[in-house]
Image (cartoon, rainbow, N blue to C red; front, side):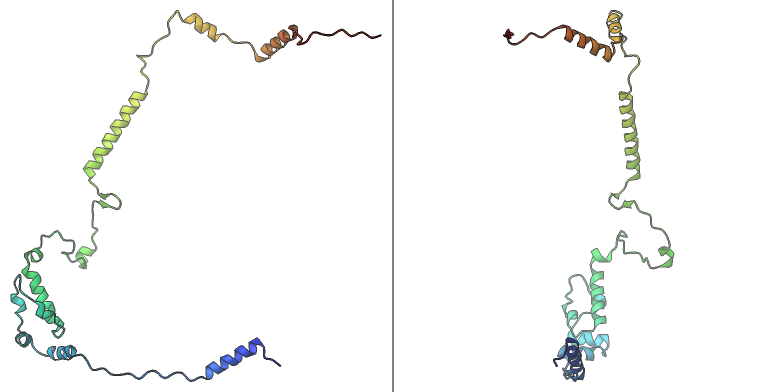
Length: 208
């Protein structure tokens, strides 16, 4: 008897469960690079010995234009590299002398300033909004609307009165017209009175 699809699926599942899991590959320990070994040694040395060892300038006395590429070497500790970069930053007057206009100059993590509401004239989609200019624009719009409304209103003094000579014509025009039913009846009467002329001459017909 051939096995069913369900039996075949159960058999393959049982065979897969019995298979041994592959062993993980052996971990090959690699030796650290020479720079890493040198870095581990330099981290235990004091600062002045490191400066003498690699002939580096004093980070506190770095001036504008000083070459600090020696501090960027991989075997130099991180604290000494940061100290050299800080000295280079201070040596540049553009970076060292702050004008107080930078948004990141103040510490916004302080509780004294974090709880205060920061007010600004900047609005999303409009940019910096000038309140005085906006108020002037509103006044201008109102004055324009008033001028347009004054032009649209008719002037009672300039309205012309109809002449007395034209009054009879106006009276004739004002007389009520006849009703539509009466007009229709008159038209039917006139149409019936007028007999249409025949197109052809009638022929006489005799019966024998």
